[in-house]
Image 1 (tube, rainbow, N blue to C red):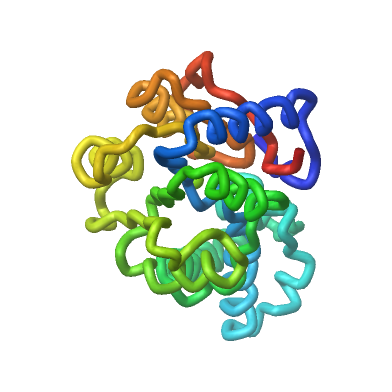
Image 2: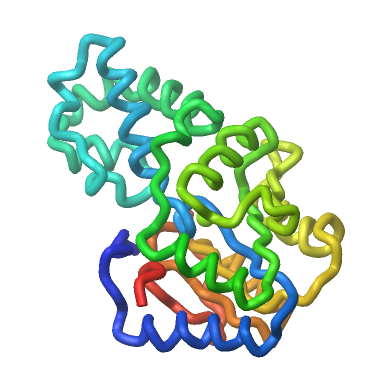
Length: 242
Ligand SMILES: [Mg+2]
């Protein structure tokens, strides 16, 4: 697990090309695409939230060295330790920082900082040009929809063209994986899933169980602790550069 989206894995070009080739051969159907840790790098959002907390708490100096590279997992204590914060400081501020992170991250307020993964916009546009309908299927909940729509449009992902669709989670408490399974089974109008992409192995496996013939990319960026074993048919990539 590591963010290496600015580089290419050894077989990455062949794998992305295979997805595009399959899209062109199909000429129609869906590309089911995850957002966080897949099309978008949300580490700038997390950095912005923590810096704003620090400014308000008079701790700007303490977090001055915190940077994108320190966000490697979803463990805030570990992130702060990588940035050089001593354990007593982390424990003294953890609850307040965690609350600020939670409030900011699960809202529309900070998504203007999200960056597309390098190459992701061009890749999704090519899938669309091949005839696929982009279906953004995310664990973000409905309250995060306005910021998500703005971010999709801002960075140039296909959006607002009458074809692209965004599915956010109606109930924030529902587990992401459960939501995605339910969305594919009951919510998204049935259509052939031709290409899928997600950074959670469990969701990659779900796409392949749903559509064994699909090309499903696993983004090796970050994922939840104790991930499911990856389906052998999944195609691992670092990002979307090819
Ligand atoms: Mg994700």
